[in-house]
Length: 220
Image (cartoon, rainbow, N blue to C red; front, side, top):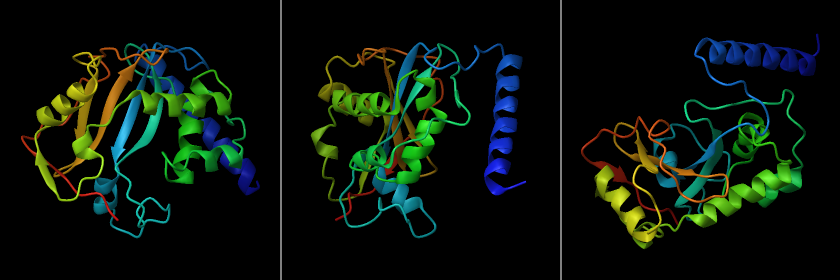
């Protein structure tokens, strides 16, 4: 069995296990275009780079001053989420990957997000990543986080309040904070299919439980 065929077989087995698990939990089948809303996940890039134990090869942790970057735009059910809706996934054009590196600064991330989440959108790759960019543009980043020069100690509530102030239409329960043992890791914001903010208590059930967290400064 060649490497390519082996990868296809392993992916198919993995998908079968995912679908079996979803069925056991009573979740809807993962079908392209069948979902209820999106979660936009924005990663605090300085935390990713500070936490990385090895040299980053993606370009994200170089001299360019990345702050919040897109981790992904994830189709969601009201409870649970679809994933890997087409295996193998339709081939992703390298030009699309290159066009996304200003907001998703790692080619492997772009490929992964298409395979796992984008294929569940029911869109072409171009349309999906255009929607990713539009979703990112929908969220106004609080000015105090755009070019953070010094490490900042914050509470999850303060971060939530800053985003609510910068985005007056942000509904309560539409945003959650994710952290590791010390740092702000990412924020997740729920959006309708038309990219308007919406509450999503089930999707945001779990979040950062620390009293305070660190925001490392932007590099560069």
